[in-house]
Structures are given as structure tokens and as C-alpha cells.
Image 1 (cartoon, rainbow, N blue to C red):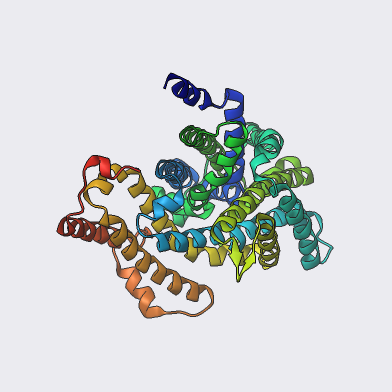
Image 2 (tube, rainbow, N blue to C red; image 1 turned 120 degrees about the vertical axis):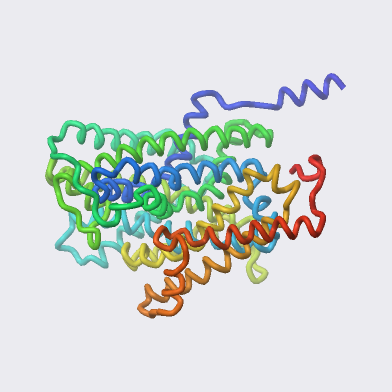
Length: 467
């Protein structure tokens, strides 16, 4: 008896401070990509003197929600277990939709498209654009695919070398801005004239980090095990600690980049219809460093996008290998799935960055509310799982129906098909201007779920609902 106890204790291994730092930086680098670089500077340039409240809202959704997502998934024992509280089929459908969104449909192609437009296109104006982009995409995805073939070793490559280099370059950019002479921050543009916190919160959706957070744990947990932490509970604890450290790093960098955007906006006027955060950064660095500044920012984008692309390929391939080990009777290995995602992403990336962003917005607006509901309920599962377990089903059902309907209408609008009746109906709903109309079906689902649980008598003793 004593021998067994001591053996169990000896097997509980913890990360050292240095190892924990490497895992945290790896986690950060998997999150911090094109969108994370683009949106904070644009927010600062557009919000001007209202940057602080707008950035608070942005950090809540772009940092707070992903970290809460990591904690919720960790406590539940994985996203599949969390989403299965609604139903196992729902967990598969939503999980696949999220993976495709943060993978080959939008996020992976966006890494190549953004880094090309920032690093290559400005330096090759005389070459054919389509051919140059195709050649760049082949090299970019090829190298990323090679590195992703060993997802358990990402901490050794990205965490030790590439991510620290990226952080150093961002630090140089921020420090330069502290000494650049500039005028006062500008008056907020119309998009940030009112409700800056809510506007910043919605802009945080574009990072896709909440969706990524639900699954990045797969790869990070493998890296933690690579350091010898094989005991499942301790692995989850290390994952949660790394997630919290990542959140602090991202919040600080977002705030710094928003300040950079405010400085740039005070020097160069911003056109919201045409300019992006990439434009905001380029305007500033080209003014200070000339052509070298453009190349410097381009290199930052390449590093950030490459790190994220590698992490996403590893995450998506790991998920599909687990969920779909066979397709039409043919075995599908991790390597096969990763190469399929790379080829598909290569095609989508060459459609252009603006097209990818336009189509992704309605899809994100449908998936994010569902993810938020699951995360909140996951963190409150001790209460909900005991007294009102049917809340999961009803809230997710009503929010899903509502947001999917909005997604269809908005996608049709992107394609040039205007469904005016539906658009007018959605515009009349409370919180429409804040893009938070999904809170109405969420509240209704919460109410119905509580009543349904009471009628069914689903309340259980405390010990019965623990997982």
C-alpha cells in the first residue's frame, strides 16, 4: 500500500520555470498571427483618443474569452466532453465547423495571403501578382507543413527560436514609436464615436482566438507531455498556467500595438473603407525607416503568420486524425490530413486577403456566440450541471438557429444577393447596433432550459455531476 502511494507521487512531474516559459511562448506564437497584428493598430488609428475603452473591449474578447476557453476546456477534459454536454453529435458537428474555420477555410489561407501582401507584394511591384503569390504560397505552406509533421516538438522549434525573435521585433517596433515625434491622437472616426467598448469587443472576433483556444490544447498538451508531464491532471494544470501566461503576454502586446496605431493615425489619415492594420503599420515604419521599415514590418508578418500556420496545421490534422481515421474505408494518417489541408489552403489563399476576410465575418458571427455560451456554461458547470443540465441543450439550440440564420443572410449579402426582409427584421431587434442580438435567444434558452430541468427533475446530488 505504501509502495503504491509513493510510486504514484513520484510519477507526478511538473514543468520547470524554463520549460513553462517555453510552453507559454509556444502557446502565444500559435495564437499570434496575421489578425492579431492587423486589428489592434487599426483600432488605435480609428479610435484615436478613444483607444483606451475600445482596447478594453478588444482585450475582453481577443484575450479574455480565449483564456476562459482554455480553462473551460481544461476543466471539462477536452472540447469534445464540453460540447457533448449538449449532445455527442453536436460536439462532432460544431468541432468540425470550428476546425475548418480556423483551418483550411479561413485562418490558414489568411496567414499566407496576409504575409504575402505585407512582405512580398510591396517589394515586387513589377512582377505578375498572381504568379508571385502562387510561388510564395507554395514555399510558405511547404515549409510550414514540414515543420508541423512533429506537433509534439513545436516547443523546440517555435518556442525556443522563432517566437522569441518575433517578440523582439515587435518590441523594437513599439520602442521606436515611443520616440517618434507625433501630434495628439485624432478624434475617433464614426465607427468608434460611440460604444467603443462594445465595438472593440466585436472586433476581437476577427482574431478567431476563442475558436482556436478550444483546440490548441491538443498540441500544447502533447508538448507538455514531451517534457515528461504524463499525469493527466498535472498536464491540465500546466496547460491552464500556460494559457494564463499567454493571456498576459497578448494583452500587453495588443495594448502596445493599439498605441502604435494611434501614433500612426496621428501622422497619416486612415480610410476605413480601404486601409487595414497592415497599412497603418506600414505608414508609420515607412515614414521612420523608409523602404527598410516596410521590409521590417513585412518580416514581422511572415514570422507571426508562419508560426500560426504551423500550429493550425498541427491542430487541424490532429483533430481530423482522431475523429476521421478512415474516409470511405481508406485509412487517413496525420500526414495525409495535414497535406490535404495544405493543398486546400493553398488554393483558398490565392483568392486574395480581402475575399477571405469578407466571407469569414458572417461565419465567425455564427460560431462565436455558440463558443461563448459553451465556455460560460463550462465554467459554471458545477452549478448548471447539478441544477439545470437542460440549459446546455436549449440555449445552444436557440442561439445556433438564430446565428445560422443571420449567417446565411449575411453570406448572401456578401455574394451580392440582398434579402431585405430578413435584414430589416434583424435590424429591428434589440442590441442590433451592437451586434449582440444573439443574447436574446440565449436568454430565452436559459429560461426554457431551467424550466425543462425542473419539470424533468434533472437536479442531481453534487457528487453525481462531477466529471
